[in-house]
Image (cartoon, rainbow, N blue to C red; front, side, top):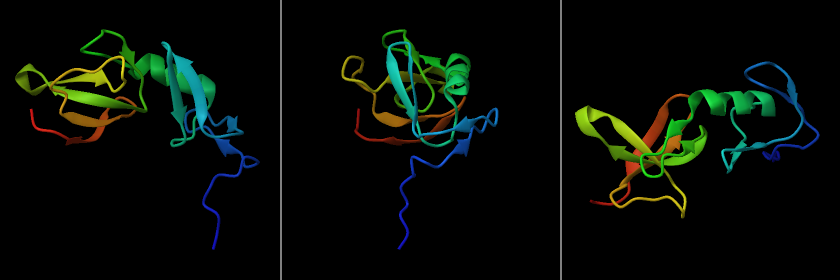
Length: 115
């Protein structure tokens, strides 16, 4: 049986720039939030750049929601979607859909309660 956990001595290449990434997850603080990314493998510099380029506005507090984080998904007018932080400090009633915000797109999301 093989061990599937990443070995801290392994190095990986950043999918954006090719720089060696010595340890996973890559962790940064962005707009007061901790962002931890195992997959894709990305260096700190590129992760910060991705957060600056692909963060979305929270429909509840107006703050930024970085990529690679859990989001609440709200249905807006004309079939659009709005996003909310999935944190204790920022949550809204009616956020019945929850998903994962990736790099510029929403991954699969599910309904977890009836409104």
